Length: 112
Image (cartoon, rainbow, N blue to C red; front, side, top):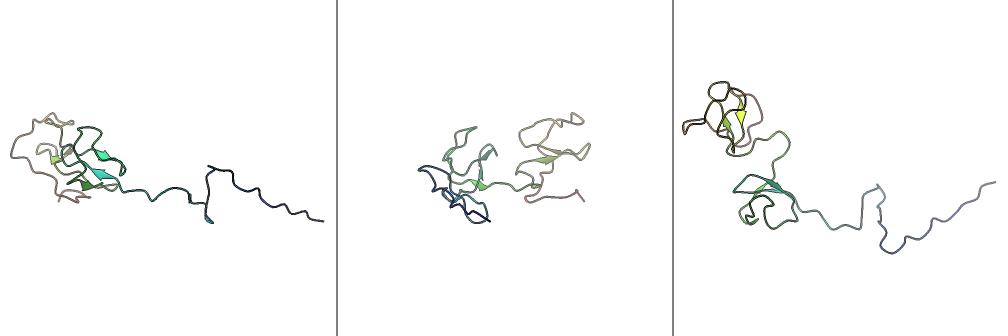
């Protein structure tokens, strides 16, 4: 003997879920973006960079996992990738010069 119950109706303001468990009450999420001045990753719903206040206009798409930001450089002494905002290599303490090799956009592997 089985008893079947009808699920309760959703309350006002309650979250609703689709067939596969995805939320259906949210608007489409805007893609994240990278600030063109300071290279900070910003949420898609923001119009200004949280770090430097620059406008979203002219922004780059956010980097995916494993991609290197524009402006990072190779240390010529120890061949390490150093962040763009650093003037000194964190590993060997080499001071950045104007002649350092920048990491090419989309770089994902070993320098060769």
